[in-house]
Length: 73
Image (tube, rainbow, N blue to C red; front, top):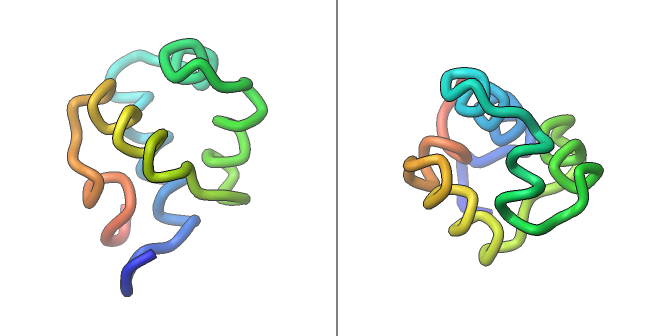
């Protein structure tokens, strides 16, 4: 990851983006065809999505990668 990116920011920003859209982790898992536990690990800042899943997640949420990965939430 680039400088300034952290798993903590990803988890917080992803949770915020889902909440703002009235979506759940299960909705994200279904949309991306991944296990609910995978999305849970992203939300708990335990792992990052692969580049492929990050691109799909951004497209699905209608956000850019910097909105999910960069800056303090």
